[in-house]
Length: 189
Length: 282
Image (cartoon, rainbow over all chains, first blue to last red):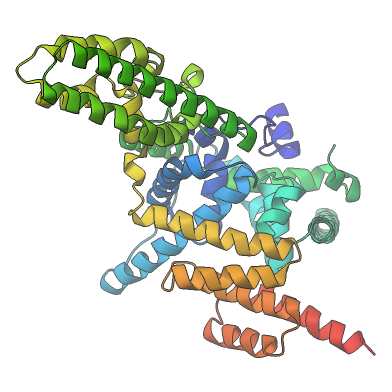
């Protein structure tokens, strides 16, 4: 429980010291790259290949990374590029094949999973109510745990704009949670 | 606590919901391990992330100095060898080996800056021969070359030596760069990303004219690149930022050409801001 609570407060805290090896980098950012790839529409069946490709490119281009942009920014854009290439080849492939996206296996606790799925579905639905700009900022901050300066870099906006978008999105999210709670109370009566 | 936490604090319920979302969208551990296993097979994970630009400069300086010393040392040895009446082929071989070093210093900078000798370590190092031997270059090379000095097969074996013995400098960096030869599509993609980043950076710095210069540079360099759509979106944004007369038309053209693009809202927003500013101006 405390572990869950910690994660709730600090999803993936970016460490102050930069990663020193590809292994270190992978350990810190694989989850981030995975989420970005999935958010960009990469299917379960293809995400392994996409991630592999992303980190191969990372490996190749590491010598060019000069630290001026945040690592998360660099990885975000790189992942997007790889996903873009993947989409093209996928589109060609899809013309010939009907691809089925297999669901993720692994269901340890059906009750907990249902609760978690319901909660995640609520967040997902909420995020769909945001415009693209707010959604990007909200996702990167609350799901990926990036700092606002990193988010501003990724979104290509100024710091104040990023803060403003995040503040608005969080307000809306908090309001939605209040409404959900109120609905639960009404249902319980 | 970061500045964003000061803005709007989420209550425990909200945090729990977000935690659930993070759990739900987390990378499955088995996938994490599978991808890493494939990476280990494909590359040497001991490649190190380059340090800050200043540290790079320092490393480049050290590498350059080392290269100069090495060349000087080889030169001395070459001269000494010549006076001992070594064969002309040996001299040629030494000359070739010496001449390689300055060029390799650049490679050394890229990889060594990435893989400083004292920390070329990874949690799961795969085959990274020579990773910790870089410091022995000066000691190994002379021994090896002396052994070969009287050989009948000097030239051929020197070639082997330069890839097998001297190699702590000569081959390791190359091996680290091999998968990413500049001609590979992936490296082109990364270059393209870097070019796009320049456009973004210029826009962030509120320099739309400079951004447009970078847009044109990107168009010249990557006419059929993977990020053409992104470039054209940024072009529209930059044009709107300059207040260019054709900006709106360009933005509309982009939106018409890519109606499904996630960048449409960005372009629209950038040009809507411009329109709003025009409305507000007297």
